[in-house]
Image 1 (cartoon, rainbow, N blue to C red):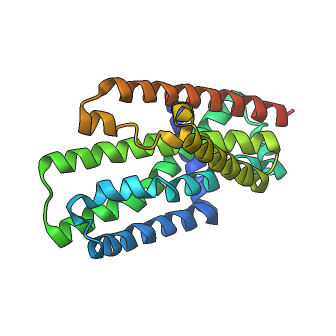
Image 2 (image 1 turned 135 degrees about the vertical axis):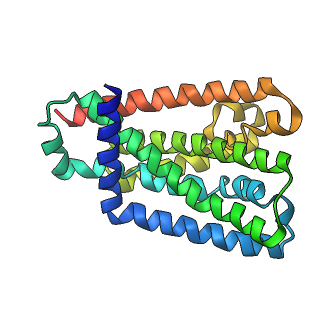
Amino acid sequence: MITQMNNLAAEELCKLFRGGKLKALLLLSFIIGVLFVFIGDRLGLADNLPITAIELLLAVVLPFLMVALGSNLMIGEFNGAIKHAFKLPISREFLFMGKLFAGWAAGALIVLCMIVPTFIGGFILHGAPAASTFGAGIAELGGAVLFSGLLLVLANSVSLWVGSSAVGLVVSVVLWMAMSVVGFLEPQLNRFFVTNYSDWLQPLLYGGDAGMTVSTLLFMIAYYIIGTILGLLAFQRKGL
């Protein structure tokens, strides 16, 4: 079962690569990462360039890229290509999860294409960082991958329910902006909004507050489950 899922996810990831959207997002991510190296160096952010890059890019850029990828992850195939996939001797749940894992892997590649250049650039321009700084950067990178994957899962679910990648993109962006505004006006509600989860590792890494990090992680896991279940229900409904 695990081998079959891995093979299906690999095939779906190859399918995403054959399309132009993922290639464009990967190239854009890499260019943004390279530009951030030079801009950050000029602004005096070289001491913790990768960490600073993750914190700033997770605020706007990476969420938008994840929404752009997630909003078209599956809904675009319902114009015809998905009908052939439904004829395969696999369950629709299995097919959905394979596509979702492939999208998650694609999202992780986008994050890596954007952040890895900051590690390399910082090393070339200013030498090797301290072990603690490098370790914190790797941990933040892993946290960014997990958070970005959550946004992709939720954006995919929204697009499946509204029935359009373009509308799903708009709705996801509007929801993000609405959560940001409400969270700003009512800070006590921030813990319930995904807009506040980008820095979920920082309380543990820089303040030793494991409770805060674990609490946020549990909320993220809950949203992962909710987004996956709702997406699966919409996927099955459209396949009928």
